[in-house]
Structures are given as structure tokens and as C-alpha cells.
Image (cartoon, rainbow, N blue to C red):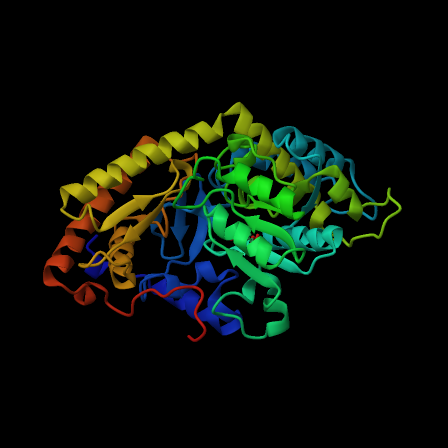
Length: 442
Ligand SMILES: Cc1ncc(COP(=O)(O)O)c(C=O)c1O
């Protein structure tokens, strides 16, 4: 269907309903309709494998599924079978269920660099738990975050550092300082400037754009040890994408604490804080020191989500999912690069990142990142049956999906070339451009 004829009237009405009742019209800002071309923000009816259907009846090949939480594809049979088994047996009790022990055992076997684990529902609770524990064990107030990473938590210690910091006291934000990714000298300088004040370094061990420079993670490990602070790897994205043992398993550097979520439950709500026994035990009952209130949540024990996590761990091993994600991503990246080059936009439509976690950049005539060009590209892809805010793959994608995607990308790139030649993408946007998530005003 041509982009001009592609309309989503039911999605449009559903978006209106959503906005009337739910601030932002979604439960994550990253899913907001401001992230999509005007009038082309599909509202999803259902999904299966690598495909989703919108309420208008269109089918899309989906990338970035569930904000990277659905790495095996929607409604994965092995995960659903495990979940269904628990559904009839009750989901939460007044005492721990044996499922909690089984899930912890399975998790620690999958991520053997961790000695203890505690589950929760959101990644944000896990990272905030890590920060509290680090502050408690060091007795220090400041948190050092990697300033190049986009997101760690919905809580004040992180959101206060973003442009959308309304409602957060400066006194809280002042306690968070930032270090650049990959720069050990700058991090050492920060640790020395605030000597004895920084409780932890928290970062994603690898990013969407870059692999860690050689020796970087080991260097951070050494810096944390020398300055007496806790090293926290946020593995929300890298866990179950770099390897099922996380980036820590792949690169062989063990943090003191690490946090998992997203793909751990293949869309079911489960996250984890894991790490050194002597630190984690401070949240336990079997020590005589001051206790830390560590991740105590009503829903952390929900049985079917823990069953989903166990099924995910088993599936990664049985189906060699990490290798499959990388192989699919490599095929996709090669196809997209070839299509972009073939249409003369190889310097403007760029695919970046590790094969299991691909993102794309859309650059304007001057080689600068451009939201209007992103909007043009997204519109063309949507009309071509591809829903792709990123090119983050799931293992449910098959060769036909990749071929279809590359074809849609080639057609989108042909239009992109026309816009570059015209020096203005506006005629191809049919509305306002997409906007960044973190902005202080609408
Ligand atoms: C690296 C990272 N850490 C933490 C979080 C927070 O996870 P959640 O949305 O489950 O609270 C996210 C979510 O996008 C993330 O990408």
C-alpha cells in the first residue's frame, strides 16, 4: 500500500481513548504516540511470534518487541506452557512458594557470577535496590551513573538528571554525578574529586553503539576496588542479549551487583537484583549488622512470572537463543546496509550496535541526526508492514521476515533519497516530526 493511502482510523480513535484516561496515552513514554509519525501510531490488538496486529487489522513485522522484553517472540510455546502450569496452582501466597527457590536456583545457574538473587517486577526497582544497598554498605551518599546511558530507573536519583526533572528536589539530584563511558581517566578523576563520597558506579556494561574498549570493564573493576565503591552492571538490556549469563559472562568481569529484567520473563513481569553474597545478605535475616530494606514487594513472588523466567533460561540453553539472535541481527544489518547503499543513502541510514541489539540512525543532508528524517523513515516502514522504532531482533524472526524488512527498507530509502535531493523531508512527513522522550515541555 502506498504511504499516502495508509491510514489507521481505529488506532487513531483508540489513541484518543488512551489519552483521555491515561497520562501519556501509554504506560511507558517510549511507547508514546509522539514517538511515531502523526496519525500513524498503531494501537496493538495482539501479537504472535515476530508479528503484531493493530486494531485496524494490519499485520507488522515487529522490532524492539515489548521494549526489548520479548526476545523469544510473542506467546512463545515453552514459556506459555510453564506459565499455564502455575496459573491453576495460585499466583501469590502468605509465605514463599517453592517456585521462588526453583527460580533463584535456575537464575544463579544461568548467571553463575552472581551468588544471590532477589526478584521484583520492574527493572527500576532492581537498580534502585542496588543503589540503596551500595549506599548502605559504603555509608556514602553519592551515586555515579554513566552519563552516556539513556535510562536506569524511574526513581528520583536518575530521573532528576534528565531534562524531565519536574517534582524532584535539587538536593536529591545533587547526589548523582556522572562519568563518561569508556573513559577510565575521567572516572578516576571523578572518584578522586569526591573521594570517600561515591557509593557506586552504575552503568550498562556495553551500550547500543559500542563494545567496551579493551580492558575497560576490568579497569572499572580496579577503580571501584581502589576507591572502595560498589560496581553495578545494569544488565537490563545486555542480559539475555549479549549472552544468557549477561555481559559479565561474556566479557569475564564480575560486578559486585547486577540488575536484570526485560527479556528475563519474555514479556512477563520479572526483574532481578543479583550479586555478591556478603552484600546481598545485608538485606537478609542472617547477620547481626544493620539491616537494609532490600526489594520487598507484594508481587515479586508471583509464581507464573517466575515460571516464565525459568522457561526463558531453559529455552536460551535448549535453543541456543543468543547465537540465533546474533545470526538474525547480522543478516538484517547486512541487508539494511546493502539496501541503503543501493538507494544512495548509505551515509544517512545507519545501522549500529551489537547484532542482537541493533538500532538505526537517520542523518540529514549535513550528516546530523534528524527527527524529521526519522519520521519519514518510520512512515515508509509502517506502510510497508514493518513496525521498527529500532532493529532490535527477536528469535522468532525468520528469513521471510528479514527479506520483507529489507525490501521495505529499500523502498523507504528510495523516498529518503528524494527528500535529501529536495533538501527538505517536510513534504513526506504529513504532520509533525517525532520528538525525544526526555523533554521538559510538550
Ligand atoms: C538499562 C535499563 N535499566 C533500567 C530500566 C528500567 O526498567 P523498567 O522499565 O522495567 O523499570 C530500563 C528500561 O528501559 C533500561 O533500559
